[in-house]
Image 1 (cartoon, one colour):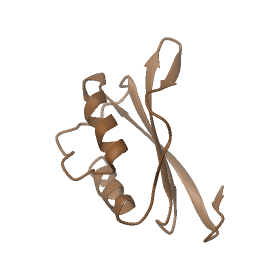
Image 2 (cartoon, one colour):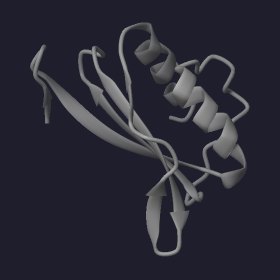
Image 3 (cartoon, helix red, strand yellow):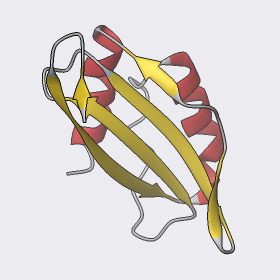
Image 4 (spheres, helix red, strand yellow):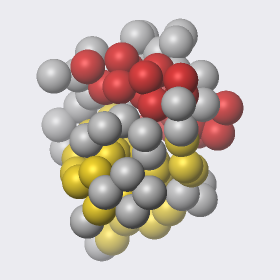
Length: 98
């Protein structure tokens, strides 16, 4: 996949979280404010999955939060598209989980 305006490669990553963080994650994603999120902990096999598509040049990102309800993942919010400083904030949030 490529982000056509800059022809930058887009990579996909997934992160899992506990269901108790659903409201916090929804608010973070919808507002694009990831600065007060370091109390949210990643959890392997959690019931929430954050899908992130990000261009290598950091000019474009798309995020979607899904909830696992047996036997599939159901979107919690619509796909959110981020640009500019919101991508930097998202990347800082995700760095916390490496």
